[in-house]
Image (tube, rainbow, N blue to C red; front, side, top):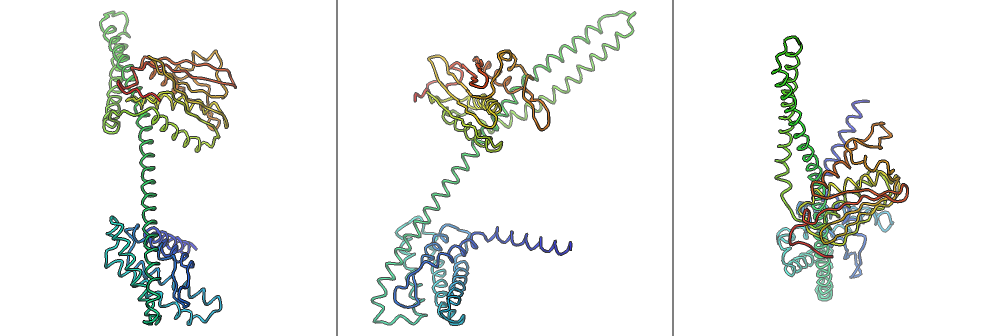
Length: 448
Protein backbone atom coordinates (compact mmCIF):
# COMPACT_ATOMS: atom_id res chain seq x y z
CA UNK A 1 0.00 0.00 0.00
CA UNK A 2 2.80 2.36 0.93
CA UNK A 3 4.76 1.57 -2.25
CA UNK A 4 1.63 2.19 -4.37
CA UNK A 5 1.06 5.58 -2.73
CA UNK A 6 4.71 6.44 -3.24
CA UNK A 7 4.39 5.63 -6.95
CA UNK A 8 1.25 7.75 -7.24
CA UNK A 9 3.05 10.59 -5.47
CA UNK A 10 6.06 10.28 -7.82
CA UNK A 11 3.79 10.33 -10.88
CA UNK A 12 1.96 13.37 -9.49
CA UNK A 13 5.23 15.20 -8.86
CA UNK A 14 6.47 14.31 -12.34
CA UNK A 15 3.28 15.66 -13.93
CA UNK A 16 3.59 18.88 -11.91
CA UNK A 17 7.24 19.24 -12.91
CA UNK A 18 6.43 18.72 -16.60
CA UNK A 19 3.55 21.17 -16.39
CA UNK A 20 5.75 23.88 -14.85
CA UNK A 21 8.51 23.36 -17.43
CA UNK A 22 6.18 23.03 -20.43
CA UNK A 23 3.42 25.36 -19.26
CA UNK A 24 3.73 27.88 -22.16
CA UNK A 25 3.74 25.05 -24.74
CA UNK A 26 0.87 23.09 -23.20
CA UNK A 27 -1.21 26.25 -22.70
CA UNK A 28 -0.56 27.28 -26.31
CA UNK A 29 -1.55 23.87 -27.68
CA UNK A 30 -4.74 23.81 -25.61
CA UNK A 31 -5.89 27.36 -26.41
CA UNK A 32 -5.01 27.20 -30.12
CA UNK A 33 -6.78 23.85 -30.46
CA UNK A 34 -9.95 25.20 -28.85
CA UNK A 35 -9.81 28.31 -31.06
CA UNK A 36 -9.56 26.12 -34.17
CA UNK A 37 -13.30 25.42 -33.96
CA UNK A 38 -13.89 29.00 -35.17
CA UNK A 39 -13.48 28.74 -38.97
CA UNK A 40 -15.02 29.26 -42.42
CA UNK A 41 -14.95 27.17 -45.64
CA UNK A 42 -14.09 29.80 -48.30
CA UNK A 43 -13.86 27.65 -51.42
CA UNK A 44 -16.61 25.08 -50.98
CA UNK A 45 -14.12 22.36 -50.02
CA UNK A 46 -12.50 20.99 -46.85
CA UNK A 47 -9.95 23.83 -46.87
CA UNK A 48 -10.71 26.30 -44.09
CA UNK A 49 -9.58 29.62 -42.59
CA UNK A 50 -9.43 29.57 -38.78
CA UNK A 51 -8.67 32.03 -36.00
CA UNK A 52 -6.37 29.48 -34.38
CA UNK A 53 -3.36 30.72 -36.37
CA UNK A 54 -3.86 34.25 -34.96
CA UNK A 55 -3.53 32.95 -31.41
CA UNK A 56 -0.62 30.68 -32.32
CA UNK A 57 1.28 33.57 -33.97
CA UNK A 58 0.69 35.83 -30.97
CA UNK A 59 2.06 33.22 -28.58
CA UNK A 60 5.06 32.45 -30.80
CA UNK A 61 5.95 36.16 -30.80
CA UNK A 62 5.35 36.73 -27.09
CA UNK A 63 6.74 33.58 -25.43
CA UNK A 64 10.41 33.50 -26.39
CA UNK A 65 10.88 30.17 -24.59
CA UNK A 66 8.21 28.57 -26.80
CA UNK A 67 9.90 26.30 -29.40
CA UNK A 68 8.88 27.49 -32.87
CA UNK A 69 9.03 24.45 -35.14
CA UNK A 70 8.29 21.68 -32.63
CA UNK A 71 5.65 23.82 -30.88
CA UNK A 72 3.85 24.52 -34.14
CA UNK A 73 4.02 20.89 -35.29
CA UNK A 74 2.73 19.59 -31.93
CA UNK A 75 -0.12 22.11 -32.13
CA UNK A 76 -0.91 20.92 -35.68
CA UNK A 77 -0.95 17.28 -34.58
CA UNK A 78 -3.32 17.98 -31.67
CA UNK A 79 -5.61 20.01 -33.97
CA UNK A 80 -5.57 17.14 -36.49
CA UNK A 81 -6.62 14.64 -33.81
CA UNK A 82 -9.22 17.07 -32.46
CA UNK A 83 -10.82 17.74 -35.87
CA UNK A 84 -10.71 14.05 -36.86
CA UNK A 85 -12.41 13.03 -33.60
CA UNK A 86 -15.15 15.65 -34.02
CA UNK A 87 -15.82 14.59 -37.62
CA UNK A 88 -15.92 10.93 -36.58
CA UNK A 89 -18.31 11.59 -33.67
CA UNK A 90 -20.59 13.64 -35.90
CA UNK A 91 -20.98 10.60 -38.16
CA UNK A 92 -19.72 12.36 -41.28
CA UNK A 93 -17.31 9.51 -42.05
CA UNK A 94 -15.23 6.76 -40.50
CA UNK A 95 -12.17 7.62 -38.43
CA UNK A 96 -9.73 6.76 -41.24
CA UNK A 97 -11.67 8.85 -43.74
CA UNK A 98 -11.88 11.81 -41.33
CA UNK A 99 -8.12 11.54 -40.69
CA UNK A 100 -7.31 11.64 -44.45
CA UNK A 101 -9.62 14.63 -44.91
CA UNK A 102 -7.92 16.67 -42.19
CA UNK A 103 -4.33 15.46 -42.73
CA UNK A 104 -3.38 18.27 -45.20
CA UNK A 105 -3.91 20.81 -42.39
CA UNK A 106 -0.82 19.33 -40.72
CA UNK A 107 1.17 20.39 -43.80
CA UNK A 108 0.05 23.96 -43.16
CA UNK A 109 1.38 23.96 -39.57
CA UNK A 110 4.63 22.25 -40.56
CA UNK A 111 5.20 24.85 -43.29
CA UNK A 112 4.15 27.74 -41.04
CA UNK A 113 6.52 26.74 -38.21
CA UNK A 114 9.45 26.17 -40.58
CA UNK A 115 9.03 29.53 -42.36
CA UNK A 116 8.47 31.38 -39.07
CA UNK A 117 11.82 30.00 -37.87
CA UNK A 118 13.78 30.42 -41.14
CA UNK A 119 12.63 34.02 -41.66
CA UNK A 120 13.50 34.90 -38.02
CA UNK A 121 10.07 36.48 -37.60
CA UNK A 122 10.47 36.71 -33.83
CA UNK A 123 13.44 39.08 -34.30
CA UNK A 124 11.36 41.60 -36.31
CA UNK A 125 8.97 42.74 -33.58
CA UNK A 126 10.53 46.21 -33.50
CA UNK A 127 9.47 46.87 -37.12
CA UNK A 128 5.71 46.50 -37.51
CA UNK A 129 5.54 46.84 -41.32
CA UNK A 130 8.27 44.24 -41.82
CA UNK A 131 6.58 41.98 -39.27
CA UNK A 132 3.23 42.21 -41.10
CA UNK A 133 4.93 41.43 -44.40
CA UNK A 134 6.81 38.38 -43.07
CA UNK A 135 3.79 36.98 -41.21
CA UNK A 136 1.59 37.47 -44.28
CA UNK A 137 4.12 35.71 -46.53
CA UNK A 138 4.42 32.84 -44.05
CA UNK A 139 0.63 32.45 -43.92
CA UNK A 140 0.18 32.70 -47.70
CA UNK A 141 2.87 30.14 -48.51
CA UNK A 142 1.58 27.74 -45.82
CA UNK A 143 -1.97 27.98 -47.22
CA UNK A 144 -0.65 27.27 -50.73
CA UNK A 145 1.20 24.21 -49.39
CA UNK A 146 -2.01 22.91 -47.82
CA UNK A 147 -3.97 23.49 -51.05
CA UNK A 148 -1.30 21.57 -52.97
CA UNK A 149 -1.77 18.62 -50.62
CA UNK A 150 -5.52 18.88 -51.17
CA UNK A 151 -4.99 19.00 -54.97
CA UNK A 152 -7.13 22.11 -55.19
CA UNK A 153 -4.64 24.46 -56.91
CA UNK A 154 -6.12 24.26 -60.41
CA UNK A 155 -4.63 27.13 -62.46
CA UNK A 156 -8.08 28.37 -63.44
CA UNK A 157 -9.13 28.62 -59.81
CA UNK A 158 -5.82 29.94 -58.46
CA UNK A 159 -6.42 33.47 -59.76
CA UNK A 160 -9.68 33.56 -57.76
CA UNK A 161 -8.30 31.89 -54.65
CA UNK A 162 -5.10 33.92 -54.25
CA UNK A 163 -6.68 37.33 -53.42
CA UNK A 164 -8.72 35.73 -50.62
CA UNK A 165 -5.62 34.02 -49.23
CA UNK A 166 -3.66 37.31 -49.29
CA UNK A 167 -6.42 39.34 -47.59
CA UNK A 168 -6.93 36.72 -44.87
CA UNK A 169 -3.16 36.46 -44.32
CA UNK A 170 -2.78 40.22 -43.86
CA UNK A 171 -5.79 40.42 -41.54
CA UNK A 172 -4.53 37.52 -39.42
CA UNK A 173 -1.05 39.03 -39.28
CA UNK A 174 -2.43 42.38 -38.06
CA UNK A 175 -4.65 40.68 -35.45
CA UNK A 176 -1.70 38.60 -34.20
CA UNK A 177 0.50 41.70 -33.87
CA UNK A 178 -2.25 43.53 -32.00
CA UNK A 179 -2.53 40.55 -29.66
CA UNK A 180 1.25 40.55 -29.16
CA UNK A 181 1.38 44.22 -28.19
CA UNK A 182 -1.64 43.85 -25.91
CA UNK A 183 0.20 41.08 -24.06
CA UNK A 184 3.34 43.24 -23.88
CA UNK A 185 1.36 46.12 -22.39
CA UNK A 186 -0.31 43.78 -19.92
CA UNK A 187 3.10 42.38 -18.95
CA UNK A 188 4.43 45.92 -18.38
CA UNK A 189 1.38 46.70 -16.25
CA UNK A 190 1.91 43.59 -14.11
CA UNK A 191 5.62 44.36 -13.67
CA UNK A 192 4.85 47.96 -12.70
CA UNK A 193 2.34 46.73 -10.12
CA UNK A 194 4.82 44.22 -8.71
CA UNK A 195 7.48 46.92 -8.50
CA UNK A 196 5.04 49.23 -6.70
CA UNK A 197 4.16 46.44 -4.28
CA UNK A 198 7.83 45.81 -3.54
CA UNK A 199 8.41 49.53 -2.99
CA UNK A 200 5.48 49.72 -0.56
CA UNK A 201 6.67 46.66 1.37
CA UNK A 202 10.22 47.99 1.52
CA UNK A 203 9.04 51.41 2.73
CA UNK A 204 6.94 49.85 5.48
CA UNK A 205 9.77 47.52 6.50
CA UNK A 206 12.27 50.39 6.69
CA UNK A 207 9.76 52.52 8.64
CA UNK A 208 9.42 49.75 11.21
CA UNK A 209 13.18 49.22 11.36
CA UNK A 210 13.76 52.94 11.87
CA UNK A 211 11.16 52.95 14.64
CA UNK A 212 12.90 50.06 16.38
CA UNK A 213 16.30 51.70 15.85
CA UNK A 214 15.02 54.87 17.52
CA UNK A 215 14.11 52.90 20.63
CA UNK A 216 17.32 50.90 20.55
CA UNK A 217 19.21 54.18 20.66
CA UNK A 218 17.01 55.36 23.50
CA UNK A 219 17.52 52.07 25.37
CA UNK A 220 21.27 52.26 24.77
CA UNK A 221 21.35 55.62 26.52
CA UNK A 222 19.31 54.21 29.40
CA UNK A 223 21.76 51.31 29.72
CA UNK A 224 24.66 53.76 29.67
CA UNK A 225 23.06 55.71 32.54
CA UNK A 226 22.43 52.56 34.60
CA UNK A 227 25.99 51.36 34.02
CA UNK A 228 27.41 54.68 35.19
CA UNK A 229 25.22 54.60 38.33
CA UNK A 230 26.31 51.00 39.10
CA UNK A 231 29.97 51.91 38.69
CA UNK A 232 29.50 55.05 40.81
CA UNK A 233 27.90 52.90 43.51
CA UNK A 234 30.90 50.57 43.37
CA UNK A 235 33.39 53.43 43.80
CA UNK A 236 31.39 54.87 46.68
CA UNK A 237 31.14 51.53 48.48
CA UNK A 238 34.79 50.74 47.85
CA UNK A 239 35.94 54.11 49.21
CA UNK A 240 34.15 53.72 52.52
CA UNK A 241 36.59 51.99 54.86
CA UNK A 242 34.28 50.88 57.63
CA UNK A 243 35.77 47.73 59.01
CA UNK A 244 32.88 47.12 61.32
CA UNK A 245 30.72 46.42 58.30
CA UNK A 246 32.06 43.14 56.97
CA UNK A 247 29.49 43.16 54.13
CA UNK A 248 30.87 46.36 52.62
CA UNK A 249 33.52 44.75 50.34
CA UNK A 250 30.96 42.15 49.20
CA UNK A 251 28.47 44.88 48.25
CA UNK A 252 31.17 46.72 46.33
CA UNK A 253 32.06 43.60 44.37
CA UNK A 254 28.39 42.99 43.59
CA UNK A 255 27.99 46.58 42.32
CA UNK A 256 31.07 46.14 40.12
CA UNK A 257 29.66 42.86 38.77
CA UNK A 258 26.38 44.59 37.85
CA UNK A 259 28.33 47.32 36.04
CA UNK A 260 30.29 44.70 34.08
CA UNK A 261 27.15 42.78 33.07
CA UNK A 262 25.41 45.97 31.96
CA UNK A 263 28.49 46.85 29.94
CA UNK A 264 28.22 43.52 28.11
CA UNK A 265 24.52 44.16 27.41
CA UNK A 266 25.47 47.62 26.13
CA UNK A 267 27.98 46.10 23.68
CA UNK A 268 25.32 43.69 22.36
CA UNK A 269 22.87 46.58 21.92
CA UNK A 270 25.55 48.55 20.12
CA UNK A 271 26.25 45.65 17.72
CA UNK A 272 22.52 45.27 16.91
CA UNK A 273 22.09 49.03 16.48
CA UNK A 274 25.12 49.29 14.20
CA UNK A 275 23.92 46.33 12.14
CA UNK A 276 20.48 47.90 11.58
CA UNK A 277 22.07 51.25 10.75
CA UNK A 278 24.27 49.59 8.10
CA UNK A 279 21.25 47.88 6.55
CA UNK A 280 19.27 51.12 6.49
CA UNK A 281 22.15 53.01 4.89
CA UNK A 282 21.84 50.84 1.79
CA UNK A 283 18.05 50.54 1.70
CA UNK A 284 16.75 53.92 2.87
CA UNK A 285 18.86 56.64 1.37
CA UNK A 286 17.30 60.05 1.88
CA UNK A 287 14.42 60.44 -0.55
CA UNK A 288 11.98 63.25 -1.07
CA UNK A 289 8.45 62.09 -1.81
CA UNK A 290 5.01 63.64 -1.79
CA UNK A 291 2.43 63.23 0.95
CA UNK A 292 0.03 61.66 -1.56
CA UNK A 293 2.57 58.85 -2.15
CA UNK A 294 2.93 58.33 1.61
CA UNK A 295 -0.85 58.07 2.01
CA UNK A 296 -0.99 55.63 -0.92
CA UNK A 297 1.61 53.39 0.73
CA UNK A 298 -0.32 53.46 4.02
CA UNK A 299 -3.60 52.82 2.20
CA UNK A 300 -2.27 49.72 0.40
CA UNK A 301 -0.82 48.33 3.62
CA UNK A 302 -4.10 48.95 5.45
CA UNK A 303 -6.11 47.21 2.72
CA UNK A 304 -3.88 44.13 3.00
CA UNK A 305 -4.13 44.16 6.79
CA UNK A 306 -7.95 44.41 6.70
CA UNK A 307 -8.12 41.52 4.23
CA UNK A 308 -5.94 39.37 6.49
CA UNK A 309 -8.04 40.01 9.60
CA UNK A 310 -11.28 39.91 7.55
CA UNK A 311 -12.76 43.21 8.74
CA UNK A 312 -15.13 45.40 6.72
CA UNK A 313 -13.89 48.81 7.82
CA UNK A 314 -14.08 51.91 5.63
CA UNK A 315 -10.87 53.99 5.62
CA UNK A 316 -10.74 57.33 3.77
CA UNK A 317 -7.85 59.74 3.24
CA UNK A 318 -8.04 63.51 2.80
CA UNK A 319 -5.34 66.11 2.27
CA UNK A 320 -5.20 69.83 1.55
CA UNK A 321 -1.52 70.16 0.61
CA UNK A 322 0.60 67.65 -1.27
CA UNK A 323 3.90 68.72 0.25
CA UNK A 324 7.26 67.01 -0.29
CA UNK A 325 9.08 65.50 2.67
CA UNK A 326 12.19 63.47 3.42
CA UNK A 327 10.66 62.25 6.70
CA UNK A 328 8.34 59.76 5.04
CA UNK A 329 9.47 56.75 7.08
CA UNK A 330 8.61 58.58 10.30
CA UNK A 331 5.23 59.74 8.98
CA UNK A 332 4.43 56.20 7.82
CA UNK A 333 5.30 54.86 11.28
CA UNK A 334 3.18 57.50 13.09
CA UNK A 335 0.07 57.19 10.90
CA UNK A 336 0.33 53.40 10.60
CA UNK A 337 0.39 52.99 14.41
CA UNK A 338 -2.63 55.27 14.81
CA UNK A 339 -4.51 53.44 12.05
CA UNK A 340 -3.88 50.03 13.63
CA UNK A 341 -5.22 51.38 16.94
CA UNK A 342 -8.34 52.72 15.21
CA UNK A 343 -8.92 49.42 13.38
CA UNK A 344 -8.70 47.51 16.68
CA UNK A 345 -11.14 49.96 18.28
CA UNK A 346 -13.70 49.61 15.46
CA UNK A 347 -14.40 45.90 15.87
CA UNK A 348 -15.62 44.16 12.71
CA UNK A 349 -17.19 47.26 11.18
CA UNK A 350 -16.56 50.96 11.37
CA UNK A 351 -15.32 54.09 9.65
CA UNK A 352 -11.89 55.70 9.87
CA UNK A 353 -10.73 59.02 8.40
CA UNK A 354 -7.14 60.16 7.97
CA UNK A 355 -7.00 63.93 7.36
CA UNK A 356 -4.23 66.43 6.72
CA UNK A 357 -4.56 70.20 6.89
CA UNK A 358 -2.01 73.00 7.12
CA UNK A 359 -1.47 76.49 8.41
CA UNK A 360 1.33 78.96 7.84
CA UNK A 361 3.62 77.38 10.44
CA UNK A 362 2.21 73.90 11.12
CA UNK A 363 1.00 70.71 9.49
CA UNK A 364 -1.93 68.94 11.16
CA UNK A 365 -2.94 65.30 10.97
CA UNK A 366 -6.12 63.80 12.36
CA UNK A 367 -6.96 60.09 12.62
CA UNK A 368 -10.64 59.74 13.46
CA UNK A 369 -12.76 56.64 14.06
CA UNK A 370 -16.19 55.69 15.40
CA UNK A 371 -14.91 52.84 17.55
CA UNK A 372 -15.26 52.07 21.25
CA UNK A 373 -13.47 55.26 22.29
CA UNK A 374 -11.30 56.21 25.28
CA UNK A 375 -12.42 57.35 28.72
CA UNK A 376 -11.22 60.81 29.78
CA UNK A 377 -9.50 59.29 32.80
CA UNK A 378 -7.17 57.45 30.41
CA UNK A 379 -6.17 60.46 28.27
CA UNK A 380 -2.97 61.03 30.24
CA UNK A 381 -2.17 57.32 30.53
CA UNK A 382 -2.47 55.99 26.98
CA UNK A 383 0.86 57.48 25.89
CA UNK A 384 2.77 55.84 28.74
CA UNK A 385 4.96 52.87 27.69
CA UNK A 386 3.37 49.59 28.74
CA UNK A 387 -0.12 51.02 29.35
CA UNK A 388 -2.79 49.10 27.45
CA UNK A 389 -6.38 47.98 27.78
CA UNK A 390 -6.14 45.56 24.85
CA UNK A 391 -5.51 41.83 25.10
CA UNK A 392 -5.68 38.80 22.82
CA UNK A 393 -8.88 36.76 23.34
CA UNK A 394 -7.00 33.71 22.01
CA UNK A 395 -3.93 33.84 24.24
CA UNK A 396 -5.14 36.14 27.03
CA UNK A 397 -1.91 38.15 26.76
CA UNK A 398 -2.18 41.90 27.19
CA UNK A 399 -0.79 44.24 24.52
CA UNK A 400 2.66 45.76 25.03
CA UNK A 401 1.20 49.28 24.99
CA UNK A 402 4.17 50.66 23.05
CA UNK A 403 2.39 51.88 19.89
CA UNK A 404 1.12 55.22 21.20
CA UNK A 405 4.28 55.74 23.25
CA UNK A 406 6.28 55.36 20.01
CA UNK A 407 3.99 57.84 18.26
CA UNK A 408 4.29 60.43 21.04
CA UNK A 409 8.09 60.15 21.18
CA UNK A 410 8.40 60.53 17.41
CA UNK A 411 6.14 63.57 17.36
CA UNK A 412 7.99 65.23 20.21
CA UNK A 413 11.26 64.51 18.39
CA UNK A 414 9.91 66.75 15.61
CA UNK A 415 8.89 69.42 18.12
CA UNK A 416 5.22 68.60 17.64
CA UNK A 417 2.29 67.71 19.87
CA UNK A 418 -0.41 65.04 20.00
CA UNK A 419 -3.68 65.04 21.89
CA UNK A 420 -6.79 62.93 21.97
CA UNK A 421 -10.51 63.73 21.92
CA UNK A 422 -13.05 61.01 22.47
CA UNK A 423 -16.78 60.53 22.75
CA UNK A 424 -16.90 56.73 23.31
CA UNK A 425 -18.93 54.90 20.68
CA UNK A 426 -19.37 58.02 18.56
CA UNK A 427 -16.05 59.59 17.62
CA UNK A 428 -12.43 59.44 18.73
CA UNK A 429 -9.73 61.69 17.29
CA UNK A 430 -5.97 61.76 17.58
CA UNK A 431 -4.83 65.28 16.66
CA UNK A 432 -1.22 65.89 15.66
CA UNK A 433 0.48 69.23 15.11
CA UNK A 434 3.96 69.33 13.55
CA UNK A 435 6.11 72.34 12.68
CA UNK A 436 6.25 72.76 8.90
CA UNK A 437 10.01 73.19 9.04
CA UNK A 438 10.44 69.74 10.64
CA UNK A 439 8.86 67.67 7.85
CA UNK A 440 8.47 69.79 4.69
CA UNK A 441 11.52 70.05 2.46
CA UNK A 442 12.39 73.72 1.98
CA UNK A 443 11.20 75.11 -1.36
CA UNK A 444 8.97 72.09 -2.09
CA UNK A 445 5.58 73.22 -0.80
CA UNK A 446 2.96 71.97 -3.26
CA UNK A 447 -0.49 73.45 -2.89
CA UNK A 448 -3.31 71.24 -4.06
